[in-house]
Image: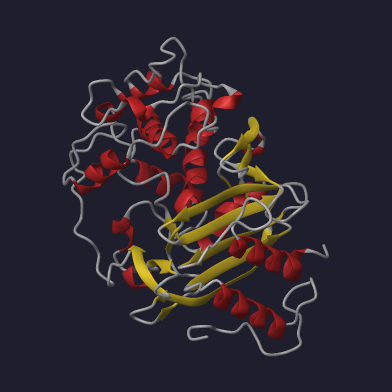
Length: 408
C-alpha cells in the first residue's frame, strides 16, 4: 500500500497480545485496504502511560503527505469531552453548578416552549436530555462566514430570533430519561457558558487551562494557532464507493492559513459556535493521548491536575441510561459515553466522532486503566458491525486490544 509505513519486519512482538511486528503490519495493511482507509492514526495507553502510537497512509493524497502520530486531524465529536472538561473546571472553582439554570449564566432565557416552567440545566446539556434539537446548521455556517462576527446565540434560541425555528425543541420534558436526543447544539451552548464564566474566549481558555498544562502543543479550536503547521493538517476525505475515489470533506488548506477572523470586538459568551466546540478540535493522536491519560488518571497527567478526582469520576459516571440512535447511546456521563460494544464485554468510557468522512474513537477502561485512540480518514464505513459501531471501528479496536492489551 502506498503511504504505508511498516512498524517492523521481524518476529519481535508488537505488543503483549501475541502478534509479531510483521503480523501487525500485515493486519493494518489488510484493514486499510478492505475499508479503503486513506489515512489512519492510533495510540494505546496502559497503566497510566502511552504504550504505542503510530500513523499509516496519507494525510494529503494530492500532495503525498503521510500520516504520522503528529498529523493534525479535526477529530469531530470527541471535542465535546474537552468542552465538558473546561466547563467542569469552572464548576470546581465555584462559579457554577451542573444543576444550575443555563439561562442564568448565559444572560438570556433558555426554555423549551413546550415546557416553559422547566429550567434547562447544564446536566441536561451534557447528558443530551435538554430537549434541544440540532436545528442550528445555518446559524453556525453564517457565524463562521461573518468577519467580524456579530451573530449571537439570542438570534438562535429566542423566539423571534432570525434563526429560531419551532423545530429547535423536542416535545419531551427537560431531564426526562425518555427524552434523550443527541445534541451538538448543547456543546455550543456549553462553550458559551465557559466564556461567560471565565470572561475568556473559548479557544483561549482551552489553550491556557487544558492544552498548555498538558503540553498539547499541536492542539487548538482556532485555525490561526496552526500558522506554522498547515502542512501537518490532514485533509478529511469522504470515500465515494461508486467511483472508488476520495472526495474532499474539509480542511483542504493547501498548506495556506485561511484569512484571519477579526475577533477584536467579539464579546465572550455571546456566540459559542465560533470555534466549533461540537466537533472542531484539531489535534494529533499524541496530543489527544495526553488528554485521554488525564482522564484515565482521574484528572491528572505528568503531575499536572486539570480536574479533581471526584470531578473526573462524576463526568465518567452514567447520568442517563436508555436506548437511542439505533442502540449506540445506552449510557451517558457528562459528555462522556459509556459502552460495552466496542470491545465486547469490556465497559469503556470515552466518545466517538463521525464527520466529513472521518471516524474517531477515544475510550478507556476505568478500573484497569488501559485505553486507545483511533482516527480513520476517508474510510468506507459500510454497514454497522455486530454491535453499535461500524466494522472498521470494531476491527481496528479489536486489533489494538488483541495486540497490546488482551493479556494484561
